[in-house]
Image 1 (cartoon, rainbow, N blue to C red):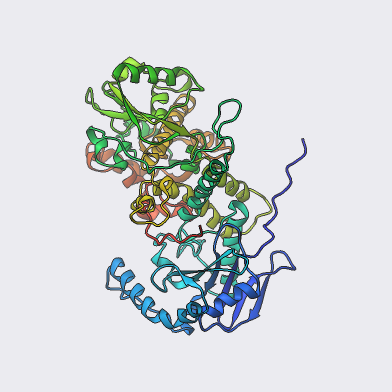
Image 2: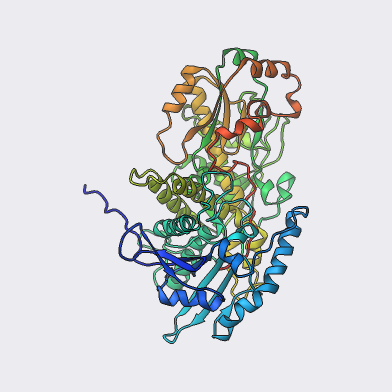
Length: 582
């Protein structure tokens, strides 16, 4: 079979960077080179003229012109926040000063017929104008030194201070880095990165809905000859149905994040030579590959019907349904491994709501590392069933897979760019899934708050469903490691496991990593020193109040992890202005 042709960079330029007295763009003559041209920028209109002079263009995103910190200072737009203020007050103060000082800077562009989105100059100011041919042109002016206003975690284009993803101090090299980062995302995903990774991934899902709506509008077939849906337009914002028990608190409690640990045995402490943490490689991007997700208004079904539906899902590998079963499982009394659902406890009959991945792993064959439960064991009393469902986030997996393949291409040997892309690719998917349950997405779907609401963006049940799928896979992996290597985890988070192992077990677990997404990789390794072992022995009876990780991975030891990685339990709720092109 002939090899697939290598993807080439899009034949376009969509980004420019303004420095002190010059503008830098990608060369249209020599690949991987840049052209720097003398250009005096004093107003926003000067920047918009760059777009026509280069020219810049993009079919799916607003083209971007970045203004480096050195030139922001020259324009008189540098404002330093009071370090004694809280982040919230620093942000409000800088935004107020930018809006006031930015009025003269923006005026000439507005006078020339450009329309400014929003209320004034900020970290990003987007202008739009309809050309004589009727096409809408949009340009985002991006002020480099103020990206912290939109991206407090350093996950966007400018990277994270103090890590390999941090931008260069030299303005010429920094301009090249910004262009490279934006263009590699464009090359792989066909969209330009926005203020945060989540928004770029959200744009991909928006395009799916635009295509689905256009197909429906022109009367194209929506179902193929085999009865499979070709398009799935979503016309209403999602809901979390009425749930009792802990799940009734909010979307994060429908399926809580796993945070489990146990006291290591004396034998485990005595035999261990290493403490290791295994992490699912790009856990959430992998989880959404085949994850079936529902949309529309769910209906309630009572006990017998819910049990039959659960039985069909458990016994038919090809059966797909999106539902949430109300169950009261028996006591979880296994001390050496975490429960497949965080609400399973050592009390009998505790209420838990089960997504399909959890139900499947619980009822799976023990010989294939399943739980071995029967439907009767789970005491199912009803279920919420969604009327429509499908692989709604598979595009996110495909985008992550493109990033991963690019990272593993031997031709790509730029360490800083690779570290940044790994962080961007992984976190864009996880953050985009979480954004479906955010206040920003809820506002996007609200016709009272948006002129053109996007109901598909607010699907709050998808985030806990993705968490359930990630946890189910982690549980299956832990059972597989137990059977193959005779070792049990002492700590589990939603997408990571901590073990005490000997030399042979460490080597076997490192060899098991075949570099695929979703596979457990050795993320942290630390010699299990006598002083750490002694501390664990002394505190076996005291660990009720803190986990073994507090001893095994103190703050000074965490530097061994990849600096480009985000912590697995990081909060990805966004804090940004959603600027985009329709």
